[in-house]
Amino acid sequence: MNVKNNKRRRESQEKIERAFIERLQTHEIKDITVSDLIKMTELNRSTFYANYVDIFDLADKTREKLENEFSSLFADYDYFNERTGALKMFKHIKENEIFYKTYFKLCYDEKFLISIYDSKRAEKEQLNNNLKYHIEFFRNGLNAIIKLWLAGGCQESPEEMAEVLKAEYRGR
Image 1 (cartoon, rainbow, N blue to C red):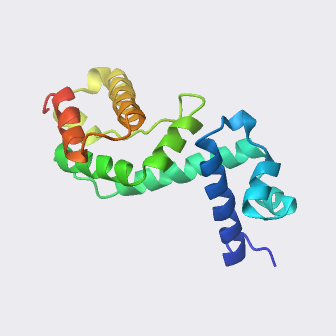
Image 2 (tube, rainbow, N blue to C red; image 1 turned 90 degrees about the vertical axis):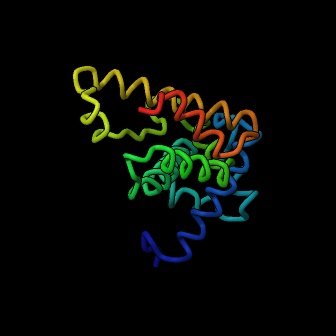
């Protein structure tokens, strides 16, 4: 019985996702084939298609999974203590460097980027007049900092990166 969340199906999905992420480190998404992944996982082609429509569906589901992981990281985020939250975020990114490199590689249409925003803080600082611009500016700046840090192999410590973010946000 192939129930959506049975153990065997989840294990197959995880194997396929791991192989996909591994392959993405050395290949562009357009160059990855179902055959590549099947060989790497030693699963049947039908197992792949029972879970995904195609490589791009796998990419979307992998990206969604990474976004959900990131969002759950901030479920109890202290919005009024940005250093703690930023430090938590940068530690998580450093511990999961491959996943974040993969995530940004899967953001092939820039609408899918890490997006956290503190609306309580914006209200406190009366940023509501131009809130949509402020959110866009912050989101793109945050993503640029993270991408640059990842591209450099996360050489700076998470603590240093939290300070960079704090300095850029001018301690507001």
